[in-house]
Image (cartoon, rainbow, N blue to C red; front, top):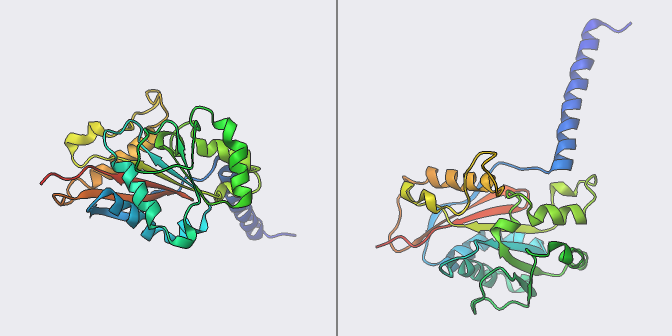
Length: 259
């Protein structure tokens, strides 16, 4: 006959295992969303390219190990700063790990800073390019894709990451924990309380979050606020980098501080 203490212990163990099972199952079906982990704390850079170079230096191993990378920027920029960040990043990559192909989404304003191998309408017709990305992953081609942060970040509703993941992986095979590509979302942030309204993604609670962008907007707002009191260096660009997913990073870059 089993003693009451052993029965109770078994119930505790069973309950604990059930909780773990539920957590793992939820993660498999809905994906994991780790907390923000700082990779580059608020720092000052001499140029946008300098920030991009430092992103690569900080994540050299991760970038070199992944054959497909998505680089997000804000749409409708008044300057070339964010494009220059990714130019500095791509130029800094070790020669043996350069990306052979650069694809730029047609929503990004054309300029001569980056010469793309191909321009596609990914944001307008994402389903049309799924098979192409499957081939890139299967053949391990080194491809970089530049497009809108609003379309690439998993923190925004109806993002491309979820679509690609659902088409590439069986949701039960564990791939949702670590996809076979890297994503960098780049956005501006507020240097002071007076600049909060310039944050490109709103921090609105449901049902006011019509664009499904509040998760990202609130994270940018929080990162901005915790750095308000830190000293700014005139003539330089403030920037920071956080890991916000298993293979996703949020790069925040502000305009040059006035002298």
